[in-house]
Amino acid sequence: MKLVGIMESIPAFLFTISTFIISYLIASKLTFGKAQITLSNKKVEFLWVEKPILTMQKNESVNIEDIESWKYRTEFQYSYFKIYNPSEVITVMRLPNWNPEKDEFENFLFTFKKRIENLNENKIKGTKNELIIDREEKHYKSNIGKILFFIYIISGVLGIKYVYNNWNTGNANIGIIIFGILGCLFYISKYRNLGNNK
Image (cartoon, rainbow, N blue to C red):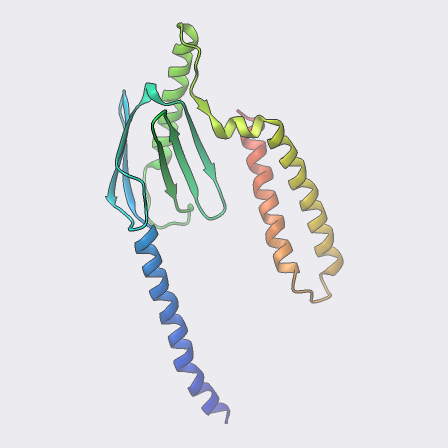
């Protein structure tokens, strides 16, 4: 009877695995793509190499001096980079660092930051006072960012206490609480890096 049960479970297992793989491939085709970003002295150009089916982002080109603000935010599952100007928003979503396909985005981001810093310095020296804003830095230096920072600390401490008191009880919620604690630590480290070191 045990052998029959195992034989009956194999087709179900193979069906589950194949369904998962097919669903992943379909989702990848619908939402994942490749883009080329070019930074010149005057422009930032965004061009799709492989465009996802469900994306609304078009090929865009924006003059650096027309940029009003920008943002680079890292999350657990992904990161994204946005450029804001009066007429449109360019958004670049990226997979985490464990993604096997390497690119030169970090070099682009470093050069872009330096270009914006130099442009802001020239604006300060000249007659233009409208600086290009780093929205992520502004958020973490705001009162809301500080409040969230303390909320994450309190939530992390309460979560650690809950796990400590219930570790041997077999409570199914412990895994969820541990994941929440890791999230709190992630955002606390982000605040320390962005809110204090910039």
